[in-house]
Structure formats: C-alpha cells, structure tokens
Image 1: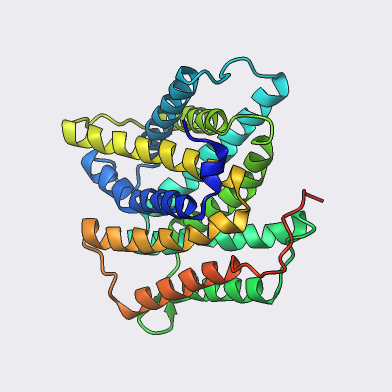
Image 2 (image 1 turned 135 degrees about the horizontal axis):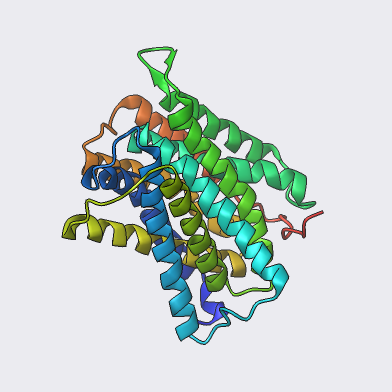
Length: 314
C-alpha cells in the first residue's frame, strides 16, 4: 500500500499530476461526445444536469465503496463533518458542474479547456487575501496577466471582434471560480478526514443534487447503448481517479509543487478536442492563447529559493 512518503517524491508527483491533468483534459471533448451519443440537445439543460449527475454519483459511489473495502471510516462521522461534506458536495460538484456542463455545450472543447485554466489565477488571487505568506508578488501578477491575456486572445474572432458568450465561455469561467473557492474548504477538511472519503462524498452528494435538479426540470437520459454506457463509465472513472489522486498530492505537498502542472490541462484538452472532435487547434490565436495561459500558470507557481511555506488562513 502506498505510504505518504511516496506522494512527496518529485518524480511520483510529476507522474500522478500529469495523469490527473490528462484525465481532466479529456473531459472537455468526451462530455461533448456524450451529448451527441445520448441525444441531448444543446438547449436541453435539465438533461445535461441528469447526465452530469449520473457521472458524479457513480464516481462518488465507486470511491466510497473502495474506501470502505480498505477499512476507512465511511459512515461513522461527526455531525459537523456530515454538514461540511454536504456543503462541499453541493458547491464543488453540484453548483460548479451546473455551470460547467451548460458552458461546455455552448463553446468549443479547445476554448473551454483554455477558459477553464482561469482556475489557477483565481486561486492565486484568493490566496493573496486568505493566506498571510502567500501574497501576490511580481511573478504571480505577471503570470495572472499573461493567463488572462490568453483568455482574451482565444475569444477574439475576425480581427478585434470579441466573441464571448455568458452561457458558454462565461459559465466555464464561473465554474473555475467556484472550484477555486471550494478547494480551500476541501483542503482544510482534509486535515481531519480521509481524502478518499471527502472526494467520494463530494462527488456523490453533488451528483445526486444534479440528478434531482435535472429530473425536476423534466430532464432525462435514455439513449443507453454499449458505446454510450462505456463513455459514461469513463467519465465517472476519470472524476473519481483524478480528484482523489490530486487531493492526495495536495495533502502531502505544497500547493505550488502540485498546481504548477495545471498548465497541462488546457494543452491536453485542446489536443484531445482536435483529435476527437476535429476542432481547429492549429489556428494561430489558439496556439498563442495556449502558450500564454500555460506560461502564466508556470510563472505563477515558479518557486523562489527563499519562498516560505504556506501558512494557515489568516
């Protein structure tokens, strides 16, 4: 069984963080493929939420069953822990993916993956106000400016015509902001609860909330075939594995040592969208935006020798 020391080895961190980013990057094209294979129309928001609910409820249930098999405490939790897990699930999985699933349906996989990279920059800005020893400096500010410049560039259409839709690119950015905010609560909760249990309940509770909301709105997902079912299983798999492994890395390492790999998500997302959806990724503005966003993320987490450890919230 893996020991905490394994999760602090730089080579292992690089391998697992890259795997997580590959899985997350693959979500952009596969969610869009899922809409097609399950015959979910672009305007059918309730059915999108049911689809998302199936994915996350399955992912969360799988993680909780594995946790129970490994002997972890899954049901015997304090009332305050149940409340914290419920709130985290409703916000981090439920609310975030309401915006993500609607947003990704109204933009391309390439643009969606680049817009989603704003998670890193929101996290840096929030840390400035929440952590005493994680204030903004010149490098972080320059990284944020580079990243947001990439976001602006990828939304330019026909010269200086800015092509940005609130229910598309806008919703993906809102989802990124929600994830940044709720990750702070999740990290603090990992101090007293097992990461696998936290992730499992967050996904499961959020998935149930998404399903219920979609059903109340008249949504349904019925076009189950062997092909579409395998796709749904893959989406559930990538959620459970990526979130759990990423949270484990964050538990045993400084945030910057792990989060620097976030620059790989828009790269994998763009390349896989081009491969699986036939989207244009070699267009100059997409490549330039990808370079700006990835460079910005790397610059934000560039570690200086005199950098002090992250302090508690204060």
